[in-house]
Image (cartoon, rainbow over all chains, first blue to last red; front, side, top):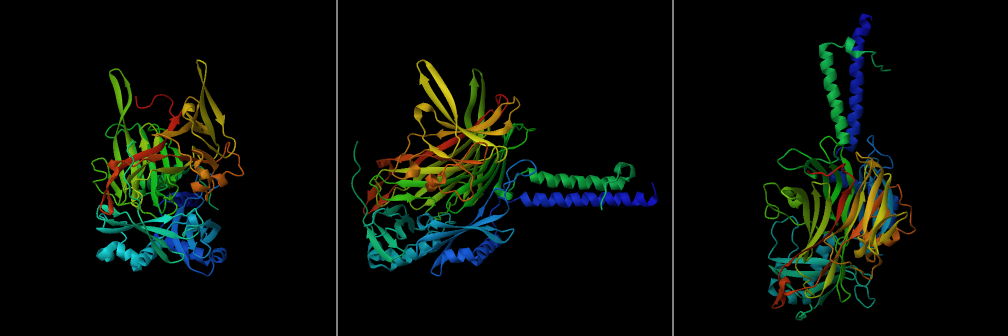
Length: 231
Length: 379
């Protein structure tokens, strides 16, 4: 073996191992942490990509559209990894928006790696969750309503929507449920309605407010009060 | 072009050998990352059993919190012995829906998909130490004794389990979403309903129907099949049948049939050469619900994996037209039911208010290993 090859061989060895390391590290990085929640930067990127997509824009229309959520989606690859296990097809986000006119949702699957929308789907309005903005709007409408204020009395202004991260409930809290109307005669039939419950410390008022977000109407729903059947 | 030397050991100096060793370790580290969990930090829970003793079994769990679904298991692997490989059990496990119809026909709440409910905050009052505690502001971890595993006269073995749970703040209700990973490879999912009865109808009977979506990937997503286990009686004989589920469909849980869904992977076998699997069966079921809505007419469903099929209320459309489910990537769905008949213990009217706390009611499912071990574990 010549002197030149003696010197070049370790260099080659080093280069080969370094290349192997880079390849392995890249493969590891691709899979490591792909199940961790989206970062704020990824969320922002996902929303931007979704809103820029022509198909999403067409489905969302020109009216009032509200962002409902951005979530990690662990879409499976059609190929297993080197150990024969399932693996994620990449880093994906689901972006759901709600369109008020037409009561529909628009769900976009965003491929964050390729920075493009992979799929777009229409979602029935009834399957689109109530957003915090919906809730705030419903509370605002209710607290502006004379009947609701009469129900709550002089403490009306003290009612707030609790912060989910708070460790203690506020003394006057508003809790909400989305209303599904099955009867055509119901004023909430095919409309986005929210029922607001009013909690005073450890008790709830049995009367509640139903807010029609589509029609921006509020009505008081009298609670049912009767003694339980004795068996 | 980079070529490997014929015999690097002959030409490598001591320092080169050191360098090579370091690089090889780094390569192995990188490869081990591929083989280990795909989550990290607080989102990764590693739990060996028994706690405080020589490890026999091990669970590796990735979790996340999602809008709507609350506490979601984004991956779960089980290792049956220290030298054995991890077997992936769940690709994804989540509560897809909690449907709550009231006896007078209205309201009919979809407590998961209709809301962006958050998990409530938790503290050490929820999950005290020393072997547990909050692992996030809204998720508890508990490691606890689970009672007897087996007893044989004077010989006895108690078991342990890891529990991860969070409570969905669903208006007046709280739903405790709990995932339990046992030392024997059993996985239990359960939901507990508690807090305050519907303030506008606190005395109206209703049913809470949690529906789980369980994306079980044994030994990879491919090659999985599901069979319905059916027990019948004929004269003095009991007969057990495994009916392979060939296409997507819903199934009813029949009490006298001990209905279960047996999931297997064609390539996953134990040391005896027996096909390994898991059996899905009810846990703490005191009844089955049948409401007007079509998705509530069945208790278990088998569907093909699709990224966008996550909403239980659309199950009838997911399985129509029915696609083949043999030797492929399937998702199982399970519906539990809690029939809540209000009682004085729930609360009382005080003036124009309702005051009281409904104690927790539970329903859930079990995923029991079948031929995963070679012999009795935890001896």
